[in-house]
Amino acid sequence: MTRGRQKRARREGGPAAAKIAAARRRELKLNAMTDETRSKHESIQAGVPVPAGRDGDGARAALLAEAERRLELAAGRDAARGLRRVVNATGVVLHTNLGRAPLSEAARVAVAREAAGYCTLEYDLETGGRGRRGARVEELLAELTGAESALVVNNCAAAALLTLSALASGGEAVVSRGELVEIGGDFRVPDVMSQSGVAMVEVGTTNRTKLSDYERAITGETRMILRVHPSNYRIVGFTAAPGLGELADLAHDRGLPLFEDAGSGALCDLSPYGLTDEPVISESIARGADVVAFSGDKLLGGPQAGLVVGRREFVEVLRRHPLYRALRADKLALAALEATLEAYRRGAALAEVPTRRMLAATSGEVEARARAFLSRVEGCRAPQSLRGQIITGESAVGGGSAPDVHPRTALVALTHESLSPGELGKALRFSATPVIARVADGRVLLDLRTVAENEEAELLRVLTSLPG
Image 1 (cartoon, helix red, strand yellow):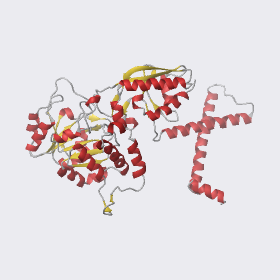
Image 2: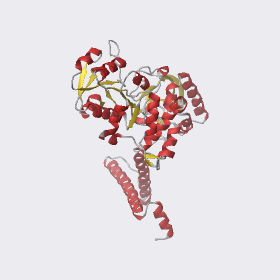
Image 3: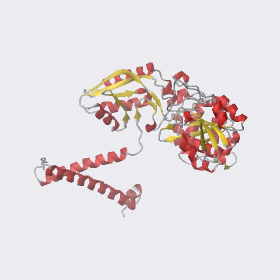
Image 4: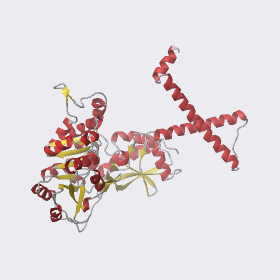
């Protein structure tokens, strides 16, 4: 092998890798040519004239050109199936299909610089021995919530499963019928309880549950009282439910732990943004909840994680349970979570955590951005067939949080003379950086609430490169 071939082989992973890559390329090209040949045969059989070119060589060249085009399309479809960064212009802040909360700049840096390589995941620099995974994150969670201890697993469903399994398996948990919810992805509270080996004891009715209902249901088999935040739905009208403090008093009088699954959860009061029904975790702890579980990738604005805070004696039972090892968070999530929690600790979450900024943005602020952006589109030689205007609309919190909260917003409404709204939306999705927008009322709608300011230039390039 010549020196040039040796270098090329090393660059491409060796002779075997190069051979496989070449075979794959030939396979894709052959498939594309076969598809085109089949298409032309079907057209001939259907009586559709098929231009053959001036001669045999011309026909062969046309066929190869079409095969190359199909190969490029196939490669594009293959790439589109993978994980790709997108511009979220839907106005849904916690868009589950788009990865929920975008990470802060500090969290992204922490993942790339601190955790991507070797790191102190379970190593203590001071002693030179083994350390505890997630120790700093747990300290921050305890400090921010007022809890005695904390634990991190890979999502909130895992936190619920671990807590139920460790504290109530083989016994009963008392829960209100109005809290037996199903959250996105077919996550059902009764199913999780069954899987954890806990017998569910339902009390009250769908819309009204009294403290006396809980009292009557407690027996010698009861292991805990469970309270579940309804997350993605609300019951309104003739409703009643005991407060968390009342449930805590009852549980403690009977020698039982009170476990609250707070769902999205929040580390601070979000009522100024209209989110009045979301539990503030520090308040749950202050009112007597022994264990509280909530998400890291929703209202907190960090990575996917299940966060457990509460009394030390119960958290340590969870830490020692065999399920913990299967459900614990990895180093990338812990790095991002630590950086996010540090922002809260410094009082800088509103400025640094994207989710907090998006929720806090007023309709006037979004409108000012939208008008300035549309002016840039019109001033950058956008396609003549593309038309835009500013209209009022609503954003959404998303992620199963605050389903009845719809922040007012301003939308950039787009139409195209030669593309239908569906075709225009598809063209945006198939741009170099996919842009995900809403299609409604015969228009494509862009909500800049969920578009970062440093993404506007990229969005502008996408719009000005549209056909027409």
